[in-house]
Image (spheres, rainbow, N blue to C red):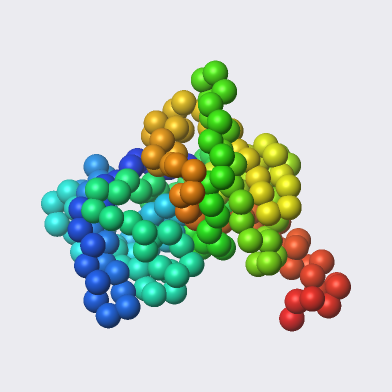
Length: 200
């Protein structure tokens, strides 16, 4: 379980394919505090630490993860948003994030607005996910508030701190991002689908 509050940026230092799996080596400042088997969210994807060496650690993404997220598009030198799992005795500053990506979206517009940025994303509505105005959404692991919700499209406002301390400053139009929709909203949507007979 996570909060969507990014702790720091990591740098991909090595990518190694093994069968259909991808081993991702990441350099991060908090590596010395990690343990084997610990969960860390990478661009919003919960992955398990499998080895640690100095200030670098390795996680493994299976084929399904690579197909459903943007992790397969990483290259050596890529920046990734990192968050360790939630501490139950701490404040929940973002919202409840599972680290399970629902689908990907595409950056379709980046607009600078005198000290902040508006990022607009489009996604495939066929998968049944929705956003709501002023609701929560997770983009590459970052907990954000929806400021403009349309069918298959939404925007978020990014303040300078978030822009600089997450991968948002690397985004370009056409980039693919990971989305995790609000867990409460997903249950409500499933409930109404059951009522309509559209969900088994």
